[in-house]
Length: 196
Image 1 (tube, rainbow, N blue to C red):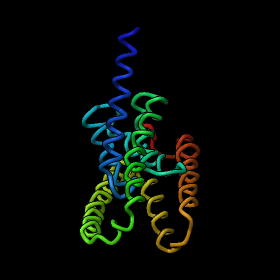
Image 2 (cartoon, rainbow, N blue to C red):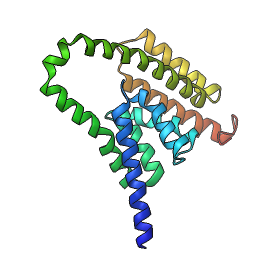
Image 3 (cartoon, one colour):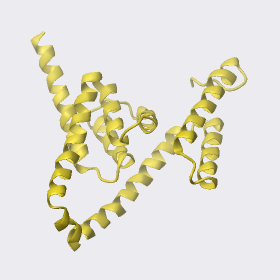
């Protein structure tokens, strides 16, 4: 029993340290964190299957709050349950909290420093590459059949034609259309098997 508790504590500590590291080194928001979560939770630790990252990202984006924290907590929940999710959430937020406290104290010095501004511009350029990598992985894992392609194209058209349209309506609309397609039409045998 004691050995089991010790293993659980060590695993929670590893989840906390992983989330702490991700929170400290990830710039550019939630989507930039997805490749880091995939590396840490899938490739390095083997806690989450690679094909689950797309689902975790989709759910993290639909939940209120920061995508990075949501994704980290969902991956940790998948790895080891609710306590792990809370531990990962704390670990993910802690570096940002500390950095923001430091920046708040020295804000004027940071804003006027040309070296800091140059470094932030460089980070912004690198973050775009992370966004593109996340986008490509999400397209590969998310566009699995003609129905998801149609939903993707329709959502993209709506975003470009109506740029002021609130994204929540697009997400809800995609969810409703997906529900109708997969659980009503396809389950009745009018389309391919959705389970594989």
